[in-house]
Length: 513
Image (cartoon, rainbow, N blue to C red; front, side, top):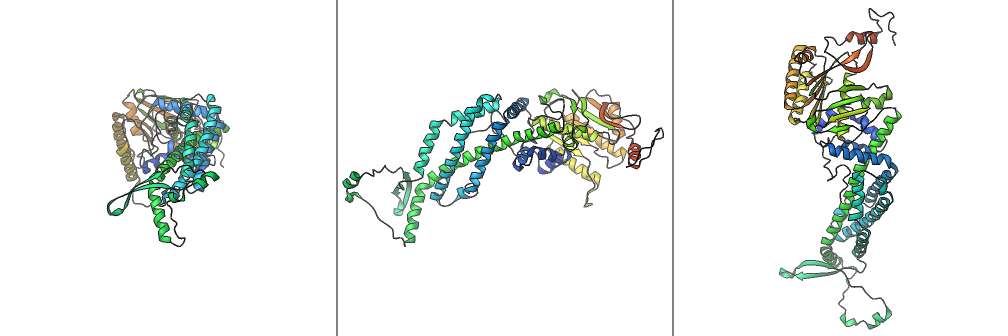
């Protein structure tokens, strides 16, 4: 039994792709926790499901579209999907209440193990029947290949006659007629090959009791005070029950694992719906992106917004229109506080969300898939004073280099600004050249004019240069436009804004707050 709502052929491995340190960098730089919080909507499990699935970049466009279609079904049939999710949550609750999956299944008492496993299987079968009934009632409402495959699996692999047989076997495994076992004598007259048998049905009619021959009885009783005898008899029965108990336990664990997996995958999709609800409430546009194969080198967006910022201030976030098709390097320069870092986060979040099968915060978005996504953003100085800022930057870059590959996407924000212009530019040029030549796509936000202008001067058709737009009065539009790097970042604009000083050509002074 496989869920296969995240992949058409298998239940994908949810193990993180990157080491914890690099995962934390991407998480912090792109402010993904804000996205996970919105996905949770107060449900801690939904948050964890999103945190598991979102960073696992899918590099097959067909699988991404498969997930988009499943998500579309979840949107169209939210109440049904929510009910299935609640069933999986109830299974988790049952397991906890009966202490079956918190150590109970690992008891040394084989008969206790058998009883508990039988009990949990009975409860799981009850939930499976409810799930099948729900599937029969609503399967026709679903259009995606993922849900159709899921409902077909329930019908084909768990038909009612099979469930009835399981019920019958579970009834026998309650051992209502006691234990019937056979044992062979081995070396030293020790018992071996203990085998559990199904006891014959006993007739309880009065004639059968009268006709019974007492001489055929082979019985003995153990004195209630004979603890050693009771333990020996219990051990004898335990050896016969052991194999059956292990088999039933494995079956119970298999069903429980199925429901746990179903809960995780549905939790991811329900989290996506919660995120969409929150963005819609804030009047933020969303769309299903168009993924293309890795070798197509596509990136085009209209109205692309930073999701994390949208979750903070809503529709006040300005969207960007960028056409970077056939570009391997995108360099962003321009005025301070002009929206450059915001744009970089929007690119990273959109790429992650697209490759998770989600919608993105844009009016339109299309990009080729990348293998992994890395971020190298500026950091505060090491509070322990064990490393200088440049040394710390290079150490993080070394970690990235150890795991990056030609299919990756690298997002750099003010990298190597911790040293002087000349040295920082030299380091940045070397890194960018190595990355681009190996096939890595790079988005680089920088104030290093020497670095940016030297790249612009080479006039490579695979490079795109964007600049944060600034009006003549110093006002930022928070839009990026194609443009040659400038030698100033207009830091005086920020100075005037903060201290309330008007520019020389301003007719009025800027009012201070």
